[in-house]
Length: 286
Image (cartoon, rainbow, N blue to C red; front, side, top):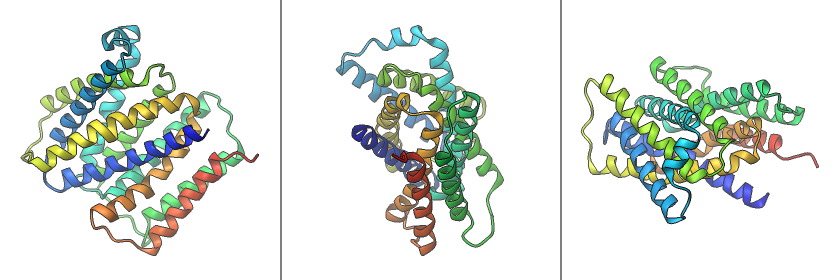
């Protein structure tokens, strides 16, 4: 349980870091949405394939042909998340974007847990309600919602994609090479989508944007998602969704440290409510 908990914390930090890195690169004008997604997926695929070969895992090609439908579904979900995620951060800040993302993920995975007839204890349900309440509090600092519709829709679609990707991860048997193949399939889909629907005025890529995209792909995405696939078989859909609600506060504090966003008492208190609800729902009564 200790190792599982440490792995979960590292994974959630990686998720929050992706929001900050994407915001820095795309909204900072260092790289276009499409280029960031392409470089991110490419870096993740290359690093994971190299790690698989170093660890002498089964050949990646054999894994692809052993369960092609699962790899295709995983790639579609991952590409949906990657593209929606990047487009949304053109107009959303790191914390708010992560809030919308994992709120959507939570609803997707809770809905799946009901369909899969998983046991939902009152403690877990109450913890989710508390955490979601904290997220709503974060979203409404002044009792108003002023959000760009296209960005919100993109992030909700990304959340559904990530929720589906997480559900598929519960079947993972060899996380690193399986994640590598998911990235390869996602890369094909992203390139095809951007070819069919090119950006009207793409931002030129500079060294900073390229570096941030590669870090996001190789470390916080590639390694982070492999770690996520490693622990998912030990979690139910409800617990996995609940745990991810702690990512928005982490992203907000990351934005404060790296993006000069303002720290307020409201952010601190609302984040404590979210973390408290997650902890209450995940920690067994015994």
